[in-house]
Image 1 (cartoon, one colour):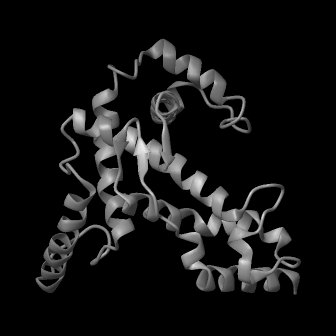
Image 2: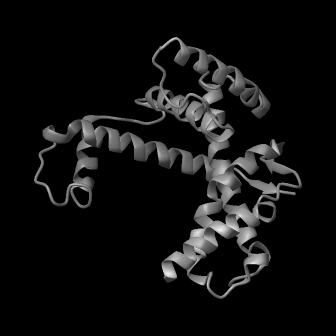
Length: 224
């Protein structure tokens, strides 16, 4: 019963307090550059449910009407959500910068990406009508189109970074394998040769994430 009540309240708050949560008034600035507020709004929508879940254990005692503006331990859910969205956006933007440097991101502005979405959707609908194979949904939303384009570009970026920005050698992979034996492979007695491809993939993923972490720490983002 408690679980049902919490789930109901989460759904109710999500529907009834969208305007309170998605507050993108103001100017978003990253490293001196003004960003498109719609990008922050996209990330706020992405993380709204996870923030609600973070507060789920308190939902039986709070007022639903002013949930987003009520302080819990000195911080409002709205502020927590905004901060989380800003940090996520910062991480995306430093990657976008790398993609542009490598010629993998054709969009000069966020509006350029939004303009391409309906064109892409129409092209996909026509392909389906012709019984052609497409990958992904027939029609993208704003968020799913960004995620699709971004994730595909990042796959290519990682390939270009291998052996350059991300150093790689057998010695590094063997050392990484020894670390993985303490958690990933803790229950299996694999040899390096048996899992070399998995080790390489895991190594490249972690190295890429650390590289992005480093760039993110050197950047600043805020809403003024």
